[in-house]
Image (cartoon, rainbow, N blue to C red; front, top):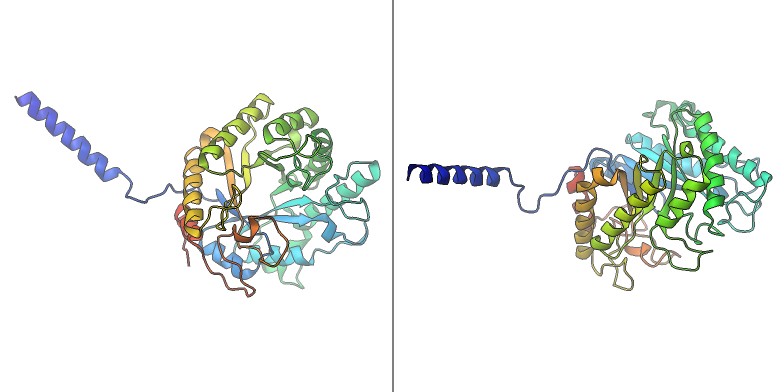
Length: 369
């Protein structure tokens, strides 16, 4: 009888202990510092970066179109808009990762054409990449300029450079070719590593399951294997994926398959960055539209719970939510971009949070307001 009482007491103590340490209802895992980032889709202001800082967001991915920086010719660089965004980010101590893409029309007929058709195109691309690193890298001229007050900014030089966007999908790369992308990647990495030894190269974020014929769309698992055969290992510091999926169950399959493919391709030591992921709150017209703001928030929670809890197994370095704000409903954008933001669209600089933002900051332990 005494033994039974001891056993019952032990069970009670263990049960009580489990209750005391169990997470409260609704609790979410804390993301490591810097693990969750943001992708703005329509510019970036100081109002945005101040709100990001309060939400404990410290990393931003910004698309930098070569076609806009050198819109006229190879001799003129217009960094004004990107300077403005870099300044807004630096003021709040946020780090920017640029995604370099989009060939100017004066060099090629279509911005989606990778600039590797001939030596002239590749040389122009190299000069553009070097100019970007020389301006925003660890020894960048941007951080020394006094006339715009840049020299007094908190110094947050670019540490990571992503080369092209969704190189496995014809919306951004034509034709889709891992060997051609591998050539571009090698050329870019050589420039970046020489211009700034602290600079890291992030491979193109690959659309997980694009639809179309092979010349227009190659799934991420096949493309990363082909890129591994077409480029040098030291040209890649991290690999990236855009695992857009209808739900978390599908997301899990995509992530496991991508990590497995990378490992089999000899890229197992390379960390993965999810440089875009998101679900929209608009009416259900496709797999990326959840139907409501509440459903968007619920899906964000489900996906983040998985990605944060499995980050070590997957070798995840960072996850960027796309996007910060909804896009202009009167503009021309993708079907889900109009409602994929954490904040609603406003013509003014005012930020009106959606439930998904309030859910997002639970993971960063930041402030929603």
